[in-house]
Amino acid sequence: MQFPNLDPVFFRLGPLEFRWYGLMYVIGFVAAYFVILAEIRRRKIPLSRDDVADMIFAVALGVIVGGRTGYVLFYNLSDYLAHPLKVFAVWEGGMSFHGGLVGALLGGLWFVRKKKLDFLAMADVGFLTAPIGLGLGRIGNFINGELYGRVTDVPWGMVFPDPQAGNLPRHPSQLYEAFLEGPVIFIVLWTLARKQRPKGVIFWTFIALYGAFRFFVEFFREPDVQLGFILGGFSMGQLLSFPMAVGGMWMIRRCWSRDKGR
Image (tube, rainbow, N blue to C red):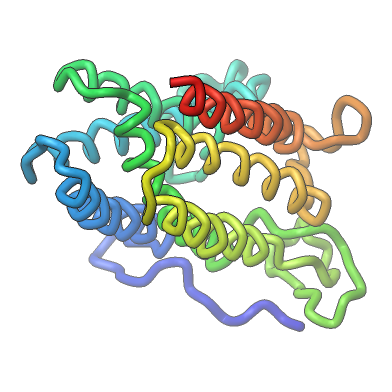
């Protein structure tokens, strides 16, 4: 299959270009605002609309700064040490989910401390919306023709336009991730949220599921060219995701055990 003729830019205004990938971030954060607003009302958490907007802003800033920092540190440190000003060239791409996760947690921690709220209770609400942005972001990766998969002979293998793809059919791994990290995780978390659960279960379920799904999909995804395979044939994404899967499952068990012990 040939990669569909998709323009990553959906609107041009003189020298300015507005890309689908950036739009996906915007849609994700807007959707998060309305979902979180509805959820805090259902849970009777004392936050106003402005408070929710402030929380989204803090988390969004954390995602962007953390995502960029994580990419620099985990995926291309030597290049950025040689060309430090490229750190600010965000239009060239380069975001790390794991760095963005740390940034989101720090932004959220700052907000809940400011409002004197319980961190895990708010994390259960906030991370309920994370699969929306993740799924949309992976679709943005697909439109950009980036982060494609390894060479394959499956019938749905796709030839991507990137010259580094070698004009060979590859797994559309962005769509695998979009499905697993988006609708699948969202349905699981939303189902959990419909009933009373021990505090932290939704948050740690997200951590565990993302870690497991990312570890799995990395077997089909082409590793970053500057890193290749590291440490026992695993990719950087797998090394960062495996602790999330294991640690998340362990923490879910602790949440349930702590609740039973009350």
